[in-house]
Length: 128
Image 1 (cartoon, rainbow, N blue to C red):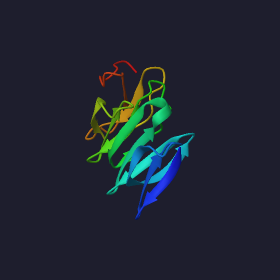
Image 2 (image 1 turned 45 degrees about the vertical axis):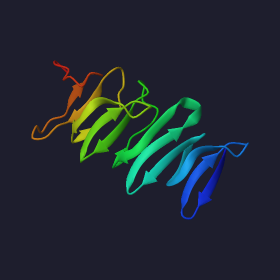
Image 3 (image 1 turned 180 degrees about the vertical axis):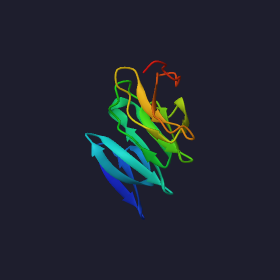
Image 4 (image 1 turned 90 degrees about the vertical axis):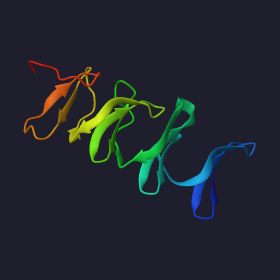
């Protein structure tokens, strides 16, 4: 793949010149063949080798390498999780969120002042 630019926007083509990603974004490489997309102040991810195509709809993104393959994302000031296609897996309702580890993630949801853990369904884990 190669980066290409049209006016002030970037995209990607393959070795035959076929468009892989249209020239509609600001692109930043953030790993091997992993690109952060930025469009109108919103962020997404593109990694063709891994089938990742998250459209730039988020204010902020977390790490790509969470154990479940999801990505933490912030939308309208709240954190949730999306899969590698951008499908919402845990709704955007948390004021802070840490990555999933051992099937759980630590979150904060105001007005509660204490953090708590959720499972991959977004349900509070009791007794933690």
